[in-house]
Image (cartoon, rainbow, N blue to C red; front, side, top):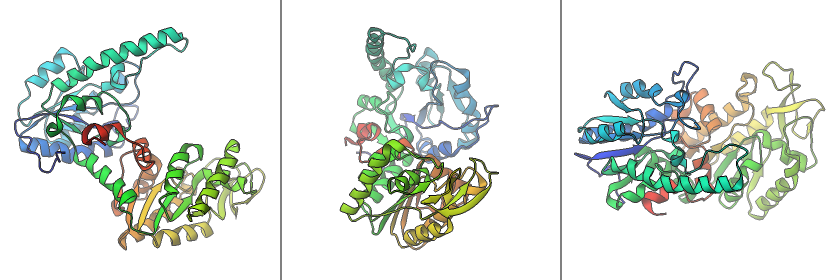
Length: 419
């Protein structure tokens, strides 16, 4: 398989699938350009070699052509970051796109309009809620058939395909996986970002230095079942944090007040505790909590044991005793995975636990541990606390990262390296 470091893009036209799905405010100003900046090393390498670039991305979840989700909104910023005026095609597969791609000169760059303006990108028909089963079947067949032409058209713009969109690697979409079939092994490769993401996850999961600690936050056990089950065969310590703490606590007979809880997942929580014991995994739950009498930054607050939360109160973050327990485990670890905050970190009064975990990871990293942070809220945490640069790696992937850690095969990766 080709690697971007060793490849010379001189004279090549390169279709680069990026993930420029960045947040915009009501005036269409970019509020966080992390994903764009993450792709810059790949794009600058291609341009420096003397190649030209056709950029493909999605923005949002449009159900057709929608001005709100036009990539025109980010065009100027991309040009500024690259230091190269970026051309724009107002339709990703229209005559304008074909003509502009064909006339690109070395060192030039063209951005295509939002790929998801076409249902063919995702391969899913867009139907009314009341569509019949027959209509759904016919529409699905039609989209799949037209998807081939859509993909073929995108591939026709370039001589090389580069996937640098890890955030969409778990989707078998036209531009993230299917397009690779139109390029032979020597003409398709990962960008720097994609390769770095793969290397980071595989370092954690396959080249593990022990002790290996995973900190799993989030509000629901149900959304993390598969990743927890996979980690129970890999880690030494599994720290359960966030709202799902209270499902485990209640399953064990604790009193959790009005804390968030999946009452239909109590047996699942007990089963996961049992599996942890069978696998000799130290599964760690909070012993105390910072509690509030309302889901608000301005609520009355206090502290209680995690399994003795009074009626009318809810757990909003871990307490100081739990902070110390978590930090001690983290600081004595050599491999660390953090996915999910310890509490409602969006509220300033409930950031302390997540900050304590982040700072413990920073200390462990300085002492030689490899730390991987992933998942939207965890990334938001380390950015908010100004410690992202002190982690070994901060992933740009959300669902893709979780599925990769779960051990699932990601279409965007398999399409290029074959597994």
